[in-house]
Length: 343
Image (cartoon, rainbow, N blue to C red; front, side, top):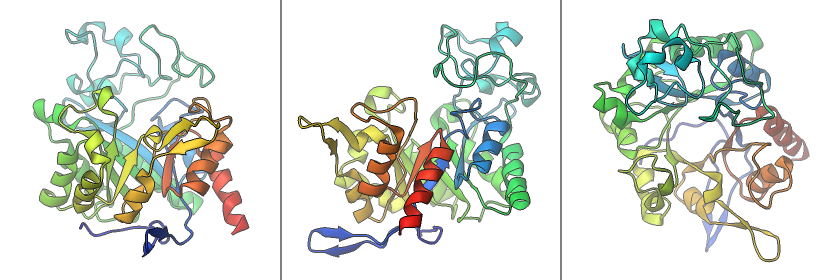
């Protein structure tokens, strides 16, 4: 099994007594999903600075590559939904009508404004968040974001780590780019390549995680993201299989944890109105895999959950997840701090 590199108290020591798993108390990680994206446009440096100020333990970076091979922080391989690319470069869409980041050099990406995420019809995905329209914010490179977080760690005397997702590695490979190598190069230049206490690498593609571990020999902890097969995230990965006992055993050979969709754990209310859960968290913990589910949003609660506070309570206090991705890191931080005070 891959070596485990964790902050003190991150992974529970799993002690099996018969069929009952007992875990030592631990404080789950607050992972700022695309930064403090509930308040500012996602993946902007402003959203990352706010997440740092709100006490996030780790701050997420989704990474894609430009045409000239520069890692930039952007959730999609497309630029349409979160930038003004269509108005600045209207003739640069592919035949499918989409504007691909990999078709633009960094110098061209620099000319774009980062916007609040929009639907294809131009309406906001989350109407109650930062208003649509010009922001004056840019699409950052991974190196720029690392410099910001590292600088804030120094000036604020508190450590926030990096939580980097390699987006669509198979797509990048078809385009002639190796996104794993490019990201590791930036981490090495930034002094983070060996900082296993300060960096997670995550991906939906199991082959890429194996490549990172076995071929590129990274010592950094790896997280296997788990989608739903119906999403079409990666047609070559069977995400239903990854949730089985056999799938989890396979993951444990190359990765240090899983990042499941929260609805793969919570199954809605039962006939009596009480919440129903799968046993995915317990089965992952039995294989010493951390569990970092996504995405916890105050303005997008699962069915049967009356409040964000109740959602956090279920996953943190009842299920014992090791961390969670949230658009609202301040609310998760406040909840966890209250728990810690009672211990």
